[in-house]
Figure 1 (cartoon, helix red, strand yellow):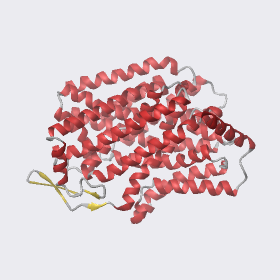
Figure 2 (cartoon, helix red, strand yellow):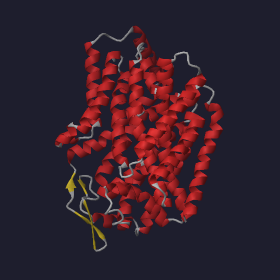
Figure 3 (cartoon, helix red, strand yellow):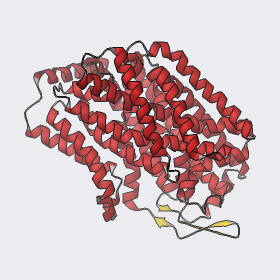
Figure 4 (tube, helix red, strand yellow):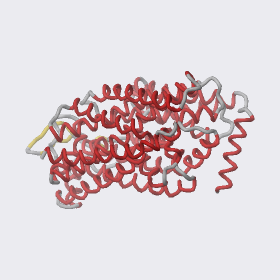
Length: 515
């Protein structure tokens, strides 16, 4: 059976490598082609690659694991926040960002911020590049963790060895084909992910005795199917059944924390780059519809698999803690399907993990090579030199991501939780103000970005320990603090330069004409 799993996953991995080879020639023309695909993505590729790179391994492992462990509440409110955030980001940010990025000739998010505010000392460029490294490296590590858990469970192999193999695989095809290969493979991976989710969902319902049987069994667990209470596993087993304590009310703070996940989208570089890379602004409307449809179906299926898994395998992970429940998708697929098909379905986890890790690694490399090396250290660097530096940085960041991933007992959801907050609070408020408020000043941009990133660290490690309302997900207070800082500093200083106002006015005029 292990060989059958191996054959299925090997076929999938070979397909991804082929995509990298096919895209290599086009990707290596220049830095715009390597880092932004030459702004040539179609609406379907743009939408589905954005969602695949955004969701990462936590969609098929972290989210079902959370639902399996504690029920609908935490997973459900988070999914609602993500769905709303996805829709609003595509609706209000996508068109203006694409237009503005062309106006200022930017091909990375740090470069957009730098050119948007006409900075000469590269402070915004450096800070935003460093923030991408700080938050994306552990994010990439969480994706490699998903691969390690997948391979070690399927093949009984060393977890750390599997992490390294997965990292080398991602590195090779990202190294070859850049953003274009990444986007094309992410499109394929988005298809694999949603097929895997839907297949396991329906098989699980069938083997559990139908939807009514799933609901009836889940209702026997205190608080499991409620959006206002959380189930409380004790970790004990009695009479072949898991033992639960009384349901725990989740409260307003927990609900707010789940919904706050949606704010992160306004600052997610891997999604924002797809807005910049699409070949035509007019195609963004279709992309939005594709993206939100894929998102809602995938989130619903992932949570449902966690609920069904609790019914099918009630005692599977009780002795190992919350982190181990992230394998529930793998357990369900390998139990209900023949090995060769289970291998193909589990390739969905591999797809989810590598579709995100390639984005994070390439974004981190571009932050250093394009923004720091060419933007600051060697302004006359050739296109070839920039791409070679990016590849060297890719290797170094991958090594560090491997280091992050080698703690097998970490919970993927927790790592993604923190990195999502950091990027969302650092870039999200500034992105919105940059696109929609002409009074935003350069000093305010610097202060807002720094205050957002720092607030995430302070709130997570210190303020949240106070409990109560202070236990809210750090993204929300950090987002608010960053927004307030941008407004206060902007209003307290000089108006933006005439050149900055001219760029803004030109972008707004184009928006009105298109409307």
